[in-house]
Image 1: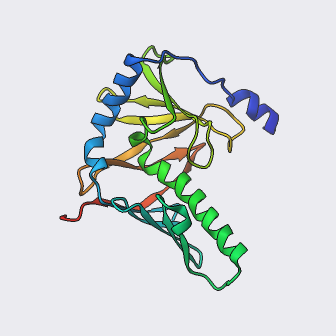
Image 2: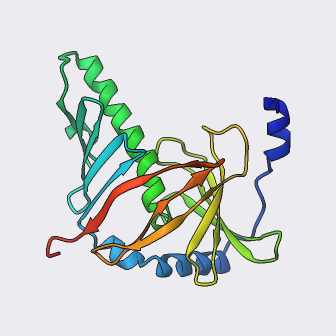
Image 3: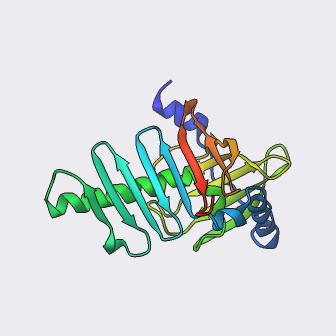
Length: 218
């Protein structure tokens, strides 16, 4: 199958939905299902993405330790100018700045695969209620700014209890619109928040391992 054939067979236009209270209520139902209140009160998260990028997030204080290859970076999410490279052989300021930017891009992408259902009401986010082909409802979430790739949109599909099962993506890094990724393997973490650690995209696993979320007193 050629790239052009693949594009025309899989590409979908972003759907239109209805914004307003019904969309917001649907989003609130999702966040209630994944125990968003307990996520907000979570102090620490850790995980590995594709067994390549490793994170320890001090969520209470806004610090993230990012490790990959032989690099280790400490990100300050509230005061980015306080971020620094902890472990690297280079003394070049330009190289260190490049590593900081790489670490932040990794974190923005990889954390989304862990906590995206908890980001439905972030600043700059719009929500629309969409009627799906099977006549059930889905939630189209669009990010106007923030992260590494502002402008991305995701159409969430949920089960009868509003637990997400998948989303379709319209994102800048994937040229085909509407590609679907599964959200499965939901687990109740030590803090009580629900997080997913099993995803599949175009038949490939996106493994989330070493996943924990806990509080100071756990």
